[in-house]
Image (tube, rainbow, N blue to C red; front, side, top):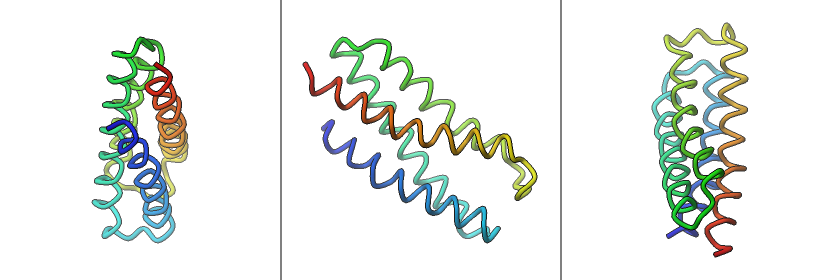
Length: 115
């Protein structure tokens, strides 16, 4: 199960980044819902990986994963209503959290496999 989740985070995370860039560059609404869907799947996978890591004994990384899985969509939704190119700090934070979520998912997967 953990291997499937990490592969989902890798693939869907990259897809969410690409669709997010398309959304930001083109300001086209059709990219909005796919980006939210992909990001929600990434956050859910990180959440489950965090719970699995905590059951394996890595509580610190697990709690960080839970917090990140909650913060990622919250910061994303702080950009609503969509005012493109006007919320630089929030957009930068959302991008940073997205990249951090992918990296932390790798760490969680490592913790799950270790035990």
